[in-house]
Amino acid sequence: MPNNRLDILRQMLEQDPASNFARYGLAMELVKDGQLDAALEQFQDLINRHPEYAAAYFHGGQTCEKAGKLDQARAMYLQGISVTTKTGDMHTRSELQAALDILG
Image (cartoon, rainbow, N blue to C red; front, side, top):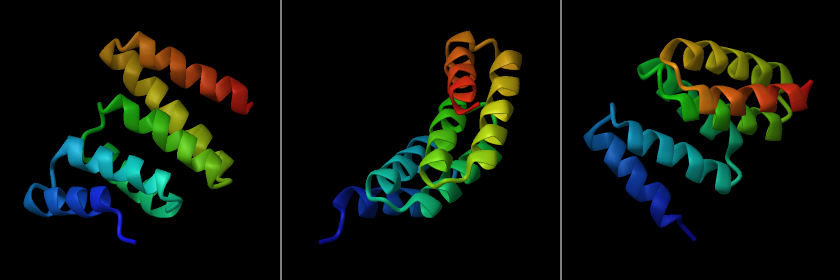
């Protein structure tokens, strides 16, 4: 059975490839659907297009962990910590640091 949310989000991205909302939403739906590699591609694309989008680092790192890509998760968390330090987003920075600490 097709996932309507996935279809809708893909259509939104076709109309506006730069949409943070649609790309982040698509990545999160792909995670829910178990399509981890496809989700990681969307998180990375979001980061490439909008490097200040802090949630992409956290959820991208979490997705890397689920996919067993621990080195990639560490790198994503560290990159997110750097970005959130520069932007002053201390709440997300602390979440990224906690995720990194748990990962070890």
